Length: 278
Image 1 (cartoon, one colour):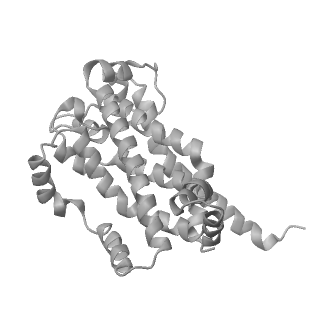
Image 2 (spheres, helix red, strand yellow):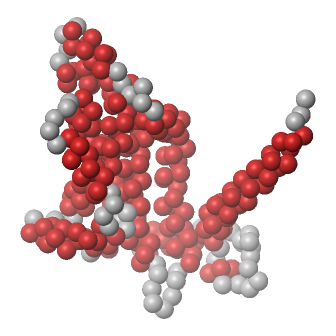
Image 3 (cartoon, rainbow, N blue to C red):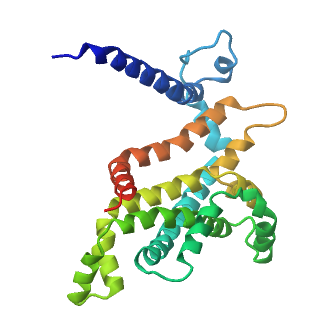
């Protein structure tokens, strides 16, 4: 039997969700369509919501006339390296904060939280000077180190919630059977936390992949810049190259969409596990 009182509410929910999806997905649709248009079609009036003659010239010119291929390489290597190292370091710091009671643990957690509230540009001057002193300006290695430092606080806070949900009795039983504490961490705890580790790594990767402010400041050479900086280069004081910009935007969004699509099950499981205290 259908409860008639709930039918209008369901209709409103479906209508609201449909409108929200339309507003969210239309910019992505427009970017894809624009990337397949010729310059004449992009500038045509009235606006064409479908390409008159789809073409891949924008994608070809993007790699032939710009350094976007190298920019993708820079973003990929920097994001993967920073996300991986930051996740490993965060595993150790989060484990210590979850399993050991020591003086200053609350202060450490507070410091991690405070770093997430402070805008990055406040520390830009000292950071840039430090990178100059170590000769790491305009190097991928220097950007990786900066991104690792940026990702560790968030990753540690996130992983601590996952560690809190793993019963300590499992480690104690493993140590009774002869494993060291570190061995119990590697062989017992981390496999249980698999979804949480994947979720943390992906969030770190996406944050590094999309970061613009630090990359613009620390990277000067065109072929070493990351993708967000390269996208910014298509916008000048006198013109916006809509075709190449749209093609670059599609290629920028595609890896993260594929990554989230493939790992969505583990991301949901990881966030759910970290949201409750077992």
